[in-house]
Length: 498
Length: 112
Image 1: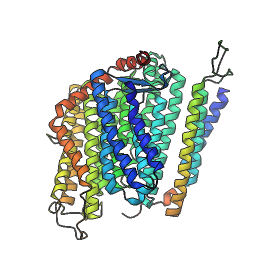
Image 2: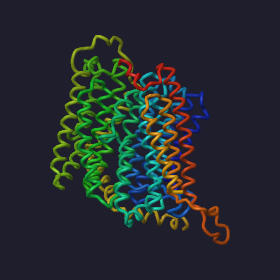
Image 3: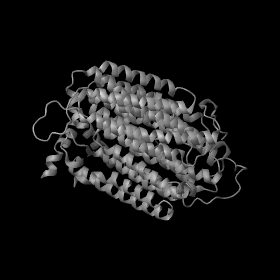
Image 4: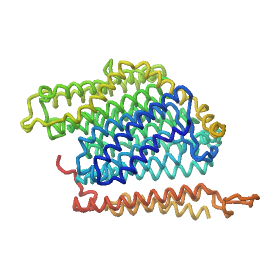
């Protein structure tokens, strides 16, 4: 039963390989992709059901006992993330059929897409620090190629920056993994949690935690390390931007969350306070960046930064409610952000531009698109009864209980400024006079269903906020009780022998 | 021996960082390969340098044996950095062909 944990990694690997084998046959590649994405979603939902009912699932690769074997660990947080990545994987795939274009499909879009999903799922499920590095690399190498695929001048230029920044972070990640091994003599996360808790060299461990914060911070795009993101993300086709914007930075957030609830909890007063301060800057700087932009997708990418700040705020507060809020925020954000990118792809096709000032008057000819955008935008800004409201409410209540009123103010200000910049998009794109440049009514029926599905999901998430928040709370309790994680990993092999 | 390796790692990291900060695309790529060599040496050094037998325990305990894990890590890291360097070189070449320059400062954003 526990072997199921490997399926979210194995299926994309298989699908990617099959797509490579059917290189010239695009229809077959599409069918393989669709089947694979659907099966992953079913497996992920099944896993969530199992983990919720029966506790943490651990699978030791090759049945080597921990700490020697590589563990795959599915606790609630990991499974929630896998369910999200599977949902986005399927939705964006359907969108990509109409969006990426023949040329990119022919040059290996589908295999790369599956390898990207494999890396993402692997990062969520692994219980080994070096294995995390490997899955990060799988994900990043796929993303480098996806970003550059098509070879337009803007893409090439931004790909290089993205590559350099992420490669630098990866190199430091590898060096930090080496130092951790030198300090603790193990790389299994559960074993590491025990060893680091007992170590006498706490200063060294805190210094190491800062190295990891840097590494994961680059991937998550938190405050001083976000500058590579807004330039590179808007360049590739919308489907690629959507999957990057929805999932990639959240892998970094997940890694921060895992590292700073399981491994580095020796000096919470220092590390988590630093995370709190960084989160406040991230929220404000990101949203201020969004306000001055006039490019639809660039506004949205700056919002990713600001939103990552909210999730990191929850990690920094380090209380059950705050962590639950952060997890709920991740769920909400992945859905809403992806849906907004998908909508920006529709307006791009309809108007032929991404500059909001050159659009205008889309409300009358495209009422459905307008409604979808309005719902998603209000949810992003945190209007009740949409999902963003509950995410922010949980975080704000959590920081009030801790007496951190500054962060309450920052969160509210960030939310207000988000609304402001969403209003700007709405004013320029959907209201106003018809832009003179637009002459032909474009077809967009193939792009609409995925976007509509995600918007529907955020509305549902808002209306049924309570059960989802309860799920997030259960996940947060698991995170705050690392002993359960450690015991589950060490009990794994005896369980398999029985 | 540790001191010597530490100096070598420091030199590789220093030279690599200098090259990464250059404007020429190709120098950045070379800088990265230096830094990744430095990281591999670092992995080797933290695994404690000592003479020991092969870590395959067949029958009796053979005395001191080497720690196999850092070497496994280095092997994986070498494979990854090989693939990334190959991709980087391809990307640099294509960038040079398309944009007509290998100077990072001259690559301005194309008008939107």
